[in-house]
Length: 469
Image (cartoon, rainbow, N blue to C red; front, side, top):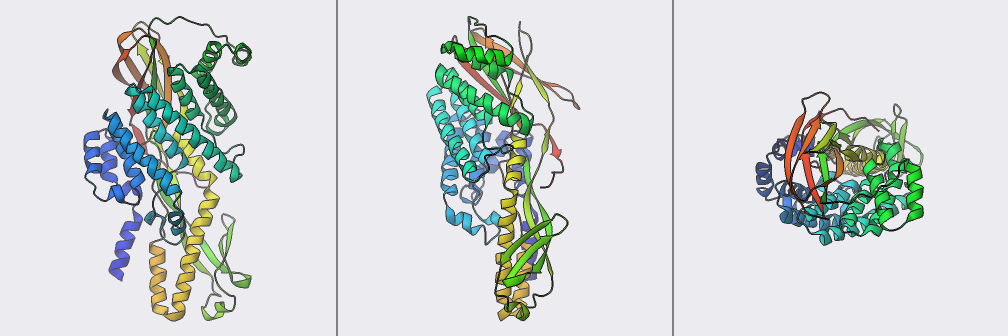
């Protein structure tokens, strides 16, 4: 039994990041070939409890190697798993009785949205606009479900992450590239509203200037004179139509790495209440959660008059801070173009967890309460066995530290007209504390077409202390 407990203790202490350290090290170093070998060499991962993350990571690694078709196949499998697992009520219910890491990981809301971001860009890089538009429609359906979810949970209030501005902007860009200017205008308008009403206050991200220009341009192209005039007054500048001789480049910069999940714990006093109620109480944080465990008359028999102290584990995020804070595109003969931030995935992750932290408290405490109820029942029959169950319960008490850890910290973008033909562009990355860095790309610009280019800079500082909720 001591050997078993020691094994449980060793495995329960490691976070998901630590358990996958070899893969994470290769990925963070930019060694995609070795990172892919680690994933491909795992026989258990494709069918394991974190198989959703396995396919998401394979999709990212394949995309960064230019294997866009293979990448989308992995992402499509992740999409299917995400849909199936979220409708698996047994998986959800079982997490109340056992360590949540032993249940299937179903993904965070923002993770399942970003899946379509990667798929969309893969299609665009392959020149398959129609498939990219299919992803747009799937994105729109997922956004509607997300809004309905938060509305039904009474969370769709100010200060809550329930709408995604970047996703609407992305849809607008894709409709725009397909010359579907009506749908592009609607998507841009929705994005502007969310940036102004939600993102500005929650994340400090204002509506990008490029978004405003695209909104005016599509309004002009659709002949929406009244809307164009109204937005020109709102923005403080007018739209001037310019005849393009070549095509356009839309450049997405994925900056840094998203946060990793860790765990933190709170000590609760288990205090007897009336009518067989047990209260999980932490006076320091002003927390009290009551649970009905048994009949009141059983307390005397089970020696529950004394106060017990237990540890309950909860998930938290650790930020991997960005190394580069600014980026500019340089094209020969043109002035430098600043990339604008359109999404802060790190902040969205923190806020999403914060929004549901009360639910996390309730789920974690219910799990511990059910364990304690089992322990009390066993103690009634066998005191020694009950002590062993108590020890195992304590050791296996662990938060779910799984999350998609290969996504960027933030996303930036820029749009610029370019002459037709093969063009050389330079991405300049600026840092407050480290030397600047440049990356050069060659893009093939076609007349009247939009070309897409992405770059993911993997530089990130070590995880910093996360704030508690």
